[in-house]
Amino acid sequence: MITDDLREKLLTHDQAHLLQELERLNDADRAQLLNDLARIDLAELRALHGKREHKDALPERHRIEPLPRPAAEEPHREFKEQIGNDAIERSEIAYLVVAGGQGTRLGFDHPKGMFPIGPLSKRSLFQIHAEKILALRRRCGARLPLLVMTSPATDAETRLYFRRKNFFRLPPQDVWFFCQGTMPAVDLTTGRLLLEGPGRLCLSPNGHGGTITGLLGSGLLDRLTDQGVHTIYYFQVDNPLVNLADFLFIGRHVEARAEVSSKVLPKTSPLEKVGNFLMVDGRCSMIEYSDLPEGWANETDDAGNLRFWAGNPAIHLLDVEFLRKIAGEAERLPWHLARKIVPYVNETGQVIKPDAENALKFERFIFDILPQAERWTIHATDRAAEFAPVKNKEGVDSPQTARAMMCADAARLLGQLGVEVPAGIKVEISPLFTLDNNRTIPPITKHTYLREPKD
Ligand code: UTP
Image (cartoon, rainbow, N blue to C red; front, side, top):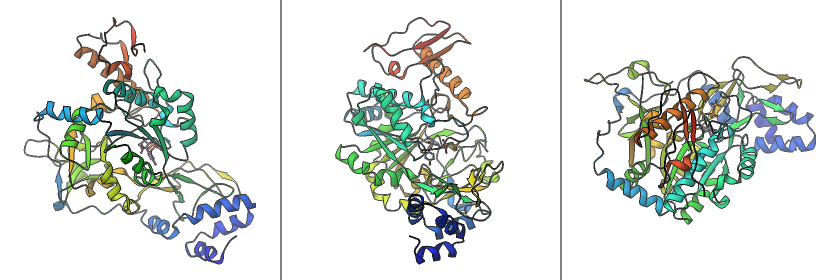
């Protein structure tokens, strides 16, 4: 039923086209649209649309400091690694992969986690991550749940994929799926909600910042606490090189009783397209590359090094109690606006496939929780060993660059074990092999895939 209230609300917020749509629909479609509309804050959307021409206000420059550079040598390194190892052995860590994105730039017809990235094995991103955790479980005798955040765009297919693949030999009860929320896309010029079909709004995942409300709403935060998990190891599905067995990263976090810890990458150029870690009013914060003024990005210190040197590979440790503490605030995290191409149906029911940006989407970002942390650590890492993002179909940050980095990393690891890989030869190492204590290296031939040891 279209109530007077709803009619009034739609007219006030310039969404009259939805009134016509509601009148046209059959009962089931109308019920669906009414249900979706009930969950949408039209006033908020209108206000957000009004900000489309403005960049987010930045803090004044005098409030901003660069992130201190970590010491070259980690003091008490072995002690901290032991702390990390102990936290894993006590099963106090859970892994959380965010896999709800639509992966539009990659243009793959399935959830990005199913992309066959293994240079020789064609292992999928999901399999690589799951097997890293399986190897760690075996080595440390620990439980280590894997939380998979999906979105309505990826949920059903992701769950089915894990089931079909027998959860990559992880116990199914230790793989926990939860689905993030959505936000509607609006027309860039008019701010009107776009429809993708009769009665169906164009809804897209609400950003990786949706992790916090998703965790809380699904009850998984409580389940983690019940199982004695203190720390979530957060990472993105599209980075096959992420190191999930970083005992030092975990140990430093635990020892500092940090609420958040983040890996950082020294940037390769001032304007590199990665988020910038820095300090605002003495708190660890992040400014997106697109928001960092060029003048600030180019600042150097006395030694000629970039002042804003710390890029974001999106690998964080999150304290479970901290997440509970801030969860009430999660609805207040800012929305970031992105201009996108979004196909839609127009008022005559015609499907329109625009060739230029026609819509605004809204996302929350996980790193906006950083400034709320009273205690944090940062952990500088090596790009070649830990960051091979799969974003684009071709060119930079594509499957091709990621596979090359995976092969180079495998060759480097073998080099450390005294096995030289001749140039031009592709090697890949199974995640189940890497953490195996009893590994022996077979001869490297033309294309070598080091498999897991036999069970
Ligand atoms: P990106 O911001 O790179 O987006 O996500 P994407 O969806 O993978 O790709 P594009 O921008 O559409 O081409 C970085 C990570 O955050 C996850 C993604 O799945 C990826 O692991 N993510 C992103 C979510 O889980 N939910 C979201 O709403 C957005």
